[in-house]
Image (cartoon, rainbow, N blue to C red; front, side, top):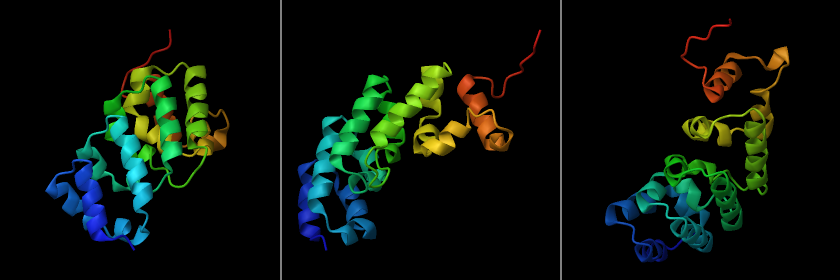
Length: 172
């Protein structure tokens, strides 16, 4: 069990406001986990990557669901593909994909597919959360030519990524 005083001290050290600290301390999930070192390591990585405390306090899973080394790797992949800090902050849950080692490699695989299909960066950023929270098998179905993969969700996502969604397209 996490000592609440230790948790409060840790959060104060990183500059969280009293309101944010209260929101975090009231989170039964964080209290049950009992891993203050993991929280501190993840906080350090997030702060070093200029993630605002307000956004962290809105997505508490980023503090404990993933390993700090994996979060660092995910940041490297996102940085290499010029994904903006604002986009990352809008969906921090991409960094908190559970205890999945190799998530950074999976994200890199998705970027290869996006590059192959010439998906523009702004379309990637607009659909960032949907793209990077999907597992790789579901993601590849978006680009599949198999009839069984042509469900509404995959077709709509393909159209959004290609920039065709909500547009009139004619063939001449």
